[in-house]
Image 1 (cartoon, rainbow, N blue to C red):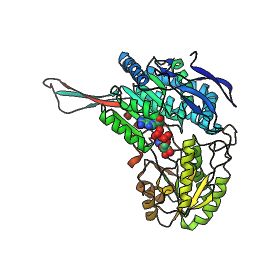
Image 2: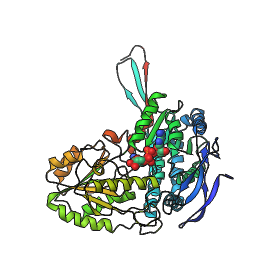
Image 3: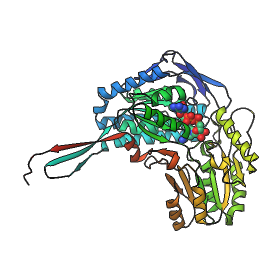
Image 4: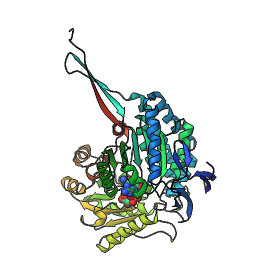
Length: 497
Ligand code: TXE
């Protein structure tokens, strides 16, 4: 790895070796064009290091490596072996949990407590899909007496995967787990804001025993490496998590290249509904967690809060106090709940939305400003007195900012909740089972939580209705994204019976 690693330091681990190369064919290589880009620490705005940047030629090399691995044997590798290797990878994540979590906090700014949770979920996800590898089954279907038909599930081939910066390693595991379990080879491009943890994790790919070319990890810019991957003629499938606007570009690129299969996990503007009969303390905790978890940088963030008029005033008062109690600061401090936003660009976008809300006449109940004068910290912000047409109610802010509105009836709140082009998640807080079920069934969202929020499990499918996406992550459903169906129909001749 000489020349393709630097020494970095975290408060938790001290000095460690940070890979900075492209991981192709189980080797660390430099980019063909000799380009690099800087990685910024969001806590103090310093430059952490520069990493190799993949351009079109590197994408070609990575795709060729994946193709060679797929055709050269991986597609025929036993399911048991695929499962065992994923399980080995899960073990390595667990063994190196502190290091991976520390790198995640350093690069992304998320609190170390949340980062440790992410890594533990990565291991769980990889192990879960390792378990699926030898349970992928076909079917026998009768049509008539002299024909024998079977339906096989086969891997798709070379999969391009483009991930965002809000859960850099968790998205790595969500994408790689099902793809590899199903027998595919992958080229994964990380987000340019957060390449570091994925590169550390790449070192475990070889150690876990994966053959060269099965898992390739590249750092690169969306418009260059991401675009090259999504329009590549030898990529059979592209999976993307990110903004809705780029999701559309990925679909266009797929359509105008080789019609590769596409799955998308995009933005959201999720409603979080609190009925007057809810346990108010629990509801406030979940509403707080729903919007401020991961600094509001969650595609499923509960950013539109609807509270029934009977408890509205009390709710605002207590919720405000709860939001103000969230510790904002150094991600490596164990009591910190909210670190900095990931980048200057995201910080500016969020502050722009806050200004829009103020100009539109919404009331700032709390927050509405940055914290400190260094690093990308924003105070947990609540807007009230909002109208449905305001940008802060309609658009994804992707920061610690929510709007709160009043409603009186079930019918009214369902209409308000569904008044969005998104449909990723929603939640209902109530002690009435009928209300919970009735409203859950009426909400147009891929996930509905009842009396909780942001509780994802790798066994449960996750994805969007409407413009929040196509396909599902996690659960058995995610395997379907990485399999194609083959029908084999055999003429048996004259039937004896
Ligand atoms: O996302 P992008 P950005 C939303 C959120 C956020 C907004 C913008 O609202 O404020 O998107 O964030 C790659 N072809 N989400 O600008 O650009 C890019 O390199 C191929 C929601 O960071 O969508 C990165 O790897 N790839 C979301 C990935 O796409 C391209 C998570 C995401 O970046 C590309 C992140 C192109 N033309 C942001 N352009 C979620 N659903 O969780 C960029 N990329």
